[in-house]
Image (cartoon, rainbow, N blue to C red):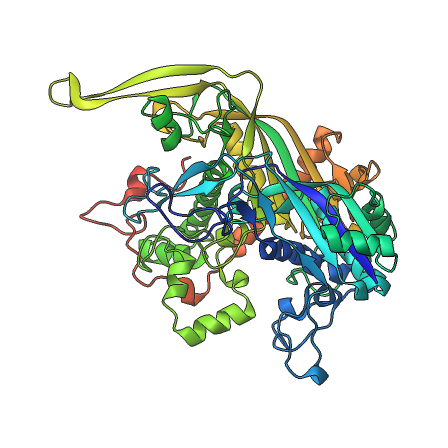
Length: 602
């Protein structure tokens, strides 16, 4: 008998939230704690994140198969794939003849001793006014652990897996993704929380048939702190994996194909503030910036939720503008144009709750379905039914493949204290009880990471347009946009794309005679001549060294693919309001908004 285990350190790259659903006077959602009050990441949360990666990687390996967990058919039967051999069947059967296995890896809770806990505030932004969404009351706060917190990873391997090298290789391939910094655990990972990297991985293999090892185990328990493990096991297992073949079963299948990582410095051109209510109370100012911790000398951080909200809001504006142009060309009267807009608008308003609101949210329609219809939608997958914005950025019905991480501050910190006073509109003097102050960052710089799993060409094109607008000052980040805060530019951009096979590269699906596509393919071929180093199972290409002409050619191809998709997009009839309360395409009291804000200006 042998004791086989894997140990390592989970080092948080961003703040972490693993919630309980319980609230107090200080926070709407508390961190998970054990019976002794110690903070922890439950083993189930770690196992779920690891299994999710393994489920997407397994089909790309020669010995892997598509798990029933991501199939719509036979989902109630025992599976037996490599993933289920490692983590247990999703639907184990009581009848032994029907198959079904328990998990062969035991993942322990990652417990943490005393640590600083922060309170993070969040608020939804009204898409029309740009202010806090007061009507929907989307305001919340939650406990988080700061970045650089270290948890101990402990995985015990069932001896029965000793002969199953394929399963162990899959486990190693999944852990390699964490080692490369592409791991995330906990809640709100798409909004910047829970990103981590795995380090100091050791593989322990102790023969318990040896009396000395057995007595040591009985006296002291498993040797989780042993330093004599195999530090090269993970790298050896990954290198032994078979060559990955092309995937030909359709793009809609949720298997691993590629990823895109955009890294850049977000540089503010003036005052900048992301308000932290708790920090403001501690500092004595009415407004104060978010800091990484409450410790003295802590550096500021740009929450991923703040940047993500800006990116989504601007993406929605771009998509709706294109839809308005298309609707304008669809007819000569307001009724025809309104019907065309309702049919083709690719971006809903995620904060609306009623189906007759302007650009009602996809979720508001789903909530109105009967249970049978909702169950069918869930069984068959809802992503293709949702608007393009919900497909890319997610919704309450489906998660998002795009992660916008918390952005740490870089460079020297400069604070400025500003006073504000509201002016009485009648007297022209200061308004009583309307005095407040703020401590703001002056021209800060933040290191931003955007990670998109299985990027489609149109998604890359859409994000390219959004980032261009952000760089051009058409979108602002943080507090006080009307006061001149939050204007930013983008510096030192870098795009890295990882693929498992050459056919996984996100090339625009346009006509072959299209000149833009030809330039994009040529640029792609030149880039592949300078492939970067391997990253886990993935081969990478970094466009930081490519020529500007090649980069623009690829970007233009992606943008054109996005424009093509928007032009041909049609919302399902079940996700369209018959009574849209919107004044752009309809006259009200003799006035027509296009007279003031035309769709096109010559």
